[in-house]
Image (cartoon, rainbow, N blue to C red; front, side):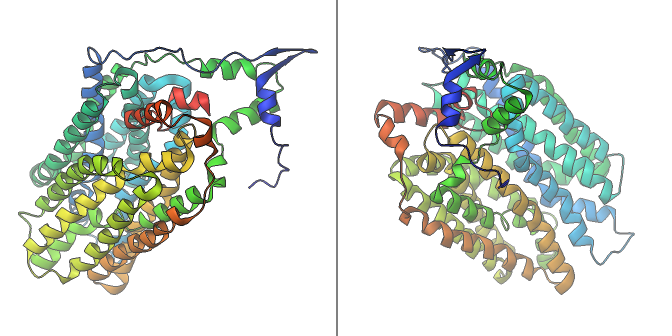
Length: 487
């Protein structure tokens, strides 16, 4: 990447094992967290679960209701006709969703350095300000910054710690906790489209932003519940290991720790991440244009919010169903569940322009939501199979970062196509192509020979079970003190 000569193999590991102080050497301290730690499995942990549910639900309830907001923003600008209005309006929601994924690797660093509580609270505060400032302007360009960047970045910093912290409080009840958070978040996604549509008509877009900001204001205080209790010496050990190095060596050590590209050396991971990136180019397009499409095509203005509710309900169902299904499929063959989901997603998007009645669109949205849920829930287990438990944190962080650019670009490109052809059908034809291409690429991932040294170094019984528990807890997501200290 940088053109610098690679270090000799094993040099970095040898340097990490020994601390140089003058001419003497001594062993580095252990990096693993204290053994025998048992999460409380309840108590204050249930407050953490509630806070995580509120965080996930508020963020994605607003983000997934962008179709409602899209129509409200355009109705606010009706007095100023613009041939490129679809393209310009699409950037508001696309930037916001893209920022959540783009800053994923950066949030990992802050979560590790300053902890889940401060990171999430600060993120919620930024998201609150982004929504509040959006209420004081009618300019799309200003809202690119206030809603798109401020709110999106704040959501990223608030969201990721809410996943990591669950592993500090639960292990045995891990499935129950994940079910509660998933189901609770879906309640927000189901109710927000209806609430936003009704309030938008009654109080207007500006006051709607103020109402939505209240949810993030509450999250500032709920995030204070994210108090880490999992003992980890990894960060202190890392700091002690580099304490006696030069400033340049310290800087390079931290860069290698937090921005390692080792996962991209695995062909299977590289192909998988590429397929995911291509797929999400069309992923956010239906959420952005669906409401505007049915209003234009079927003159439907009273039940259009039902479409987003259907997608939210079925997405939650898909997440619950795909977990047990994935457990029954060995190894990398889990990817074929994503292949089927992507292929169906592409076909369903292309079928949208063929719908003759509003009820047909409802059926398509039900299956689109199901495919969405099955795609999302298998990201972590597939990352485990591709790179192993010790690199799964980086694998998830990088794939989320890679997803950000195409996910952000998709809706504006679709809007540009609409402005050029003055036709909504072309939007959904465009949205259907990337998932089908992504499915074709992912189909070949299990067929690529891969070396799995991490499987040979660990016992496939107890160790793999523990690693899977970490994944289900969210601890392999960026910012986990356990996995970061082991990488």
